[in-house]
Image 1 (cartoon, rainbow, N blue to C red):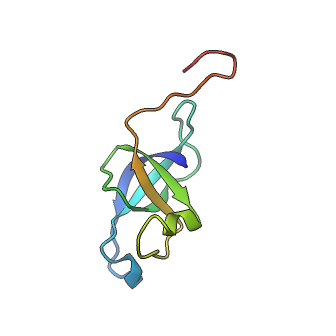
Image 2: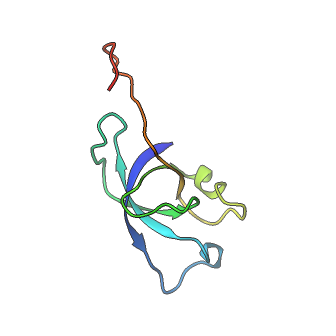
Image 3: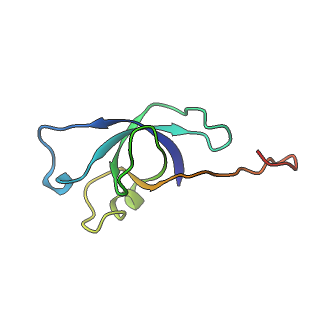
Length: 95
């Protein structure tokens, strides 16, 4: 699973029928260590009802499709809303 922040929503006038009823979010991937942005934002289907500016965890590829009962044609899916996390510093401490 990967960390991201919801930065927007995507609205479509036409889409594949398997996506009907699914919210599409624009998410910015983040590093776990310091929550710095990594790469470009991506579009992910929302399986959990995430809202604007929330930190979320997401999956990609086949794992994204199986996050839904009907396995829609998606490459990324938000599967959890983060309340917090802890990263152990490899030098012996915690961040």
